[in-house]
Length: 132
Image (cartoon, helix red, strand yellow):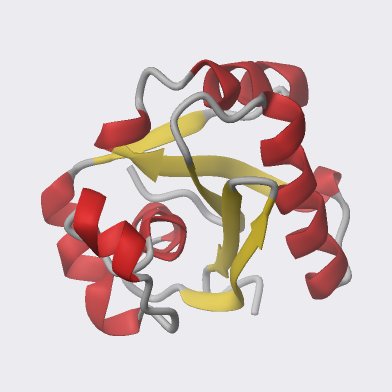
């Protein structure tokens, strides 16, 4: 499913809290000069589907957490700006947060804030052409 608007892609170490994920998300929002209210959705990869912090954060913010499959993460790879060896070691993506954001925001989306790392969590923002 493609989401129109700004999508926050998230990644994290196993067991990362919702508060630590929120720290990364807030840092990305500050960089983009937007507020949490400007976000259309959250996104992450299949590998993070059951992370309690991700699930809690989505519920806390009232946003849908889109789970992106490996095929769609790989399809977004050419548009990624950040290369993380750690991400590559655990996923099929050089930046899970960027790939998840891009895949969820659609083929015409672009990264507006590359991967930010904070307290074991990563966040990147992607937006569709209409928002850009």
